[in-house]
Length: 112
Image (tube, rainbow, N blue to C red):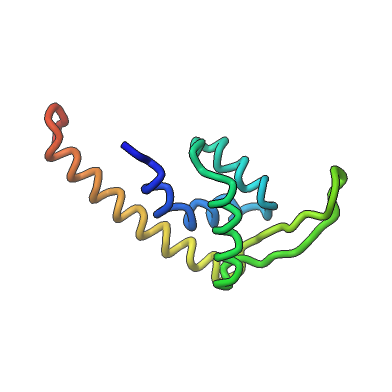
């Protein structure tokens, strides 16, 4: 199964989630997602998501010096972003519970 379609639908939510406790710059967000098991997430997808969420008012952005090169653009959640994360988390849990229920009741060899 191609997980890239599932990832596209959840990318906004997981980006908000990884920034909930600590601000991060683009590559840092990408690294956190990959370390969490989303190894198929692409660089361009993450950077585009950060820009889109920032434009929507869910993220703030600021630059900070880097000891390893040029300044980095950091992102953090705004109050609207925290609200979106809470709503998205509730929607995701409802959706994933429904999918799990369907799989449990219709896939051979699974117990209901």
